[in-house]
Length: 460
Image 1 (tube, helix red, strand yellow):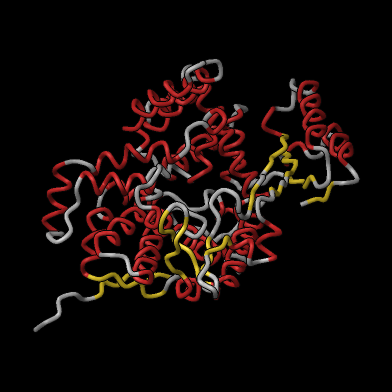
Image 2: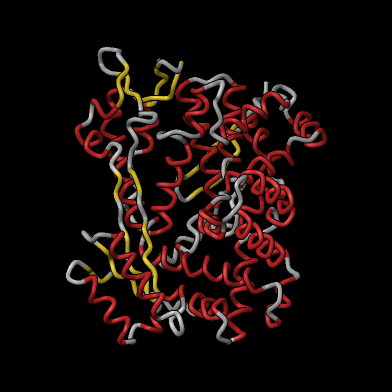
């Protein structure tokens, strides 16, 4: 008898030969071939990271497929049933479906980052939750139909809602999830660094199901403590040296400021008339109105939901290309509008000067800067000098710790079994830097401002 359950191969620079069974291929292919998922090809994983690390041109598309593969490997290792495996693979595949252009950077156009990519996710998922999609999907998957109930479980896992199956949710979103296991290795590879490397295969080998007060959870055996130490340190180093790299954050700050200034002027600034009618232009004008409302509104959640519903049709079509097109257009205008000035900086890669702020009272520094801006607002624009902060935490032991099955078959949080992890648990690391537009560096007032922060400053 011929075995029709062959492996479907995707060649990947990170995981090598990613093998999906025929069943797994049928579970994910209808989603991969959908317009929403294909849009992720045009959204870079690391925002403007490739302006600093030229190889970092990988996308959310790459990462999501890698994440679904990692989920399949975990599911196989811990022995999930077929239908449970189907749910986690789909959830990991779709976990980033709500991202906008330049990934996390785009979220900063909203007041206090009030609308993040997760807020858009239910709208994308709702487009899949339709009879015609389910019907076509179930014809392809006669053994494991997709139902409303199953899709609700998938959404719960993606949206971090109180899950009915904690074990499955851990594979999708936890401190040991498929998402992190893929993006650390992937981002490290494409940036050309080794900070994010750890022994994924040994990590997988050490994964197991553990019992907890919340039922069955994803954990590791005592043999995996060392690789988790390596993994958590990799996450810390990637955060400090890649995700929060000063030049990257400064460029993304410029991009956000460009979009904010553009949004504020689109309504009545004649040189931007062409942009006003584009989907990005319409979206930015509405975002500008939303930001003005929520600054003084009491019921911000109501305004947020209204904005999401009214602007999803445009948002779901946006990608990096929409932004790059406008950046090029604004740069060519060559006028003094802040959006055009910022576009020229980005288009021509004229990077800001970044000065690290170490061992300094940030509150005092911000007061000094605020007074400087107030005094010089006539000829130094707000975006030209700023303090950018990037706090982070490597591991949270209190919230939902990684659980270890000890040699004595007891379950303990990993910080009780690792001196290193205990040392970094629940510790916030705060870094900050002064970001100065290179065009004003020679101004005597800027030189004087910098001297106010000396001697504790180190030039980046």
